[in-house]
Image 1 (cartoon, rainbow, N blue to C red):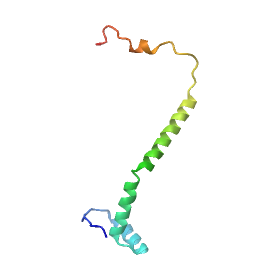
Image 2: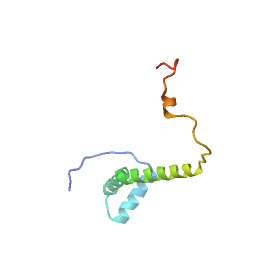
Image 3: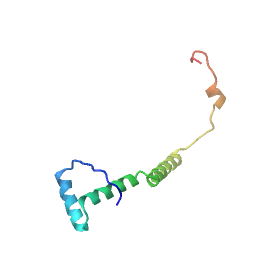
Image 4: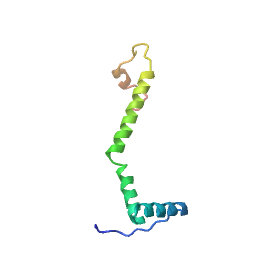
Amino acid sequence: MARMVRKQMYIEPRQDERLKQHALSLGKTEAEIMREALDRYFAGTDDAVRDEAWSKLMEMAARRRADVTITGKRTWTRDEIHERKPGRGW
């Protein structure tokens, strides 16, 4: 077994009861259950979660683009936007 580091934490009575029942039903110690829960929690912050969030963002962007109707061409150029104008502090 790997070297362990002792930690103490406070949990609510309802969490304590559920933890005891769950550990008993699985034949594991409460500490094992808590270590497994921590591993699952930190695994959720890996690439899979970021990839899922990115996919959801891209889907949202695609839906937003589908809702936009462009009725004409723009009347400005990029150079006009970036043109230095007096009084703008440039």
